[in-house]
Length: 226
Length: 361
Image 1 (spheres, rainbow over the protein chains, first blue to last red):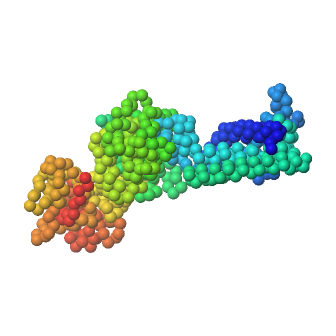
Image 2 (image 1 turned 60 degrees about the horizontal axis):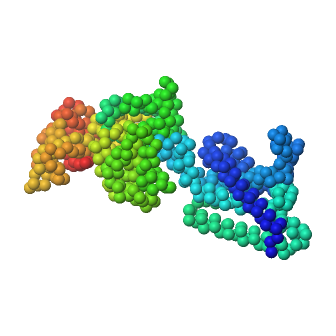
Image 3 (image 1 turned 45 degrees about the vertical axis):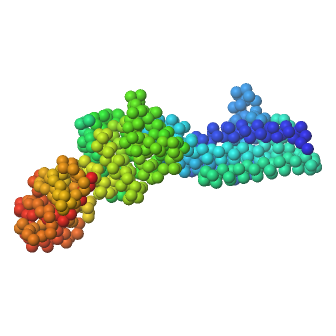
């Protein structure tokens, strides 16, 4: 069944996915709000940029991240200047990559929820003496709740399923950057099909349950998926 | 009650028209903004509320300046002491009725007590709905809750944007009496947007007629309705509003005699007691003109008048005759040929024959 290495990979995967989801909700909310509200011309380009990880091969994304995080890259130079060393082949680097890789999965459901809500609730709040920030937290966030739930589930599931980016910038180091998907890859490379089966089957069931749950949730709240 | 007048001057460019108004309004009563769709009524209301950017505007409500860009004064919407009732149900879906009602109250200045909310709940008859979800309410109930929510903040001005437009006829009749109570009991000045001449007749103290972003008429409702240029916008509903008092009730014929400042009128007894104040509407299309006192006619309401002016109506075959009856004004819609045959001219003494009188409250 599951050996210690597999358990380690599962733990690391769950840690990565949880932290990624948390960070994504924080990062995606202002981006989604701006995309849903701004009359700016920049909405188009920024929207496309945010969606880019959806269509790019993960290896392309991983490659650029590797370069950027490396000793000669802009982020690498910055982190070295701050005394943190380089982030490539570390858990932090993996976290950064995951956040960028799953960004569209978090931004789009939240953006759609804000758009579906329309301007009116915020206007009503203003006529009832609520300051803009107060209105955002007391009206916009609760009304967009289904979008946030969808965003959280998709971000988590997508991070669990990521492979290419991990391999490019994480390098498959046991206990540090080896997640379930790369662990499976390792088992297959080593012809350990029984081990691979356990992990792959687990991922299959996990993914199905997540999507089923999301489907039921959306049917109940009648909100759009991305 | 405040007697300071309000001043609203703003311009706002829209796709189809440019709103450009400069209004001096009484600081009390209901001011109805009337006009067809796309005449700028809602834009004006949004401008007053600060929901639209209106550079260079002046908004002074009952003596308090909300916006005067020339003087560098601009209060954002949340700092303006207003209540706003939107056209469609605008209750927060994530809160129940009670929490919706408390939303504005909690954010108001400390001076606002919960008495205002309790009074609004009582006034609008929604005490039984407090624990419900907003989705469990009917359209009429939602609008009543929305009005109460706006009132709970004790606004200095209540803005209502076609509050009845999203409701069917029966629900409208449910809400109108509540609005009348509001007007009579609360003394909060209101700006009320509508394109329904019925609502104008029932609620307006002051009437502002808007057309393509411009003010066509502004003044006390009976003056504006009786003005000869009003038919252009009121169309088939042109007519006079008369404020009258019940003077006599005839039990045999089930009739009531009303006295107004130009004579008296008989109409069907509606159960009002003697001394009760009512408002009646006499549509121009229900009034005809005779140069001699009519004899042998079935029409019961005959008023001696002096012709004030005659203007062409919307259709070239018709004309509107504006007549002075005591201190009141009555309008008649007649054919242009009748004007010619009877040789009607300003200053002539005539009889107005009134076929129908409608009680509006």
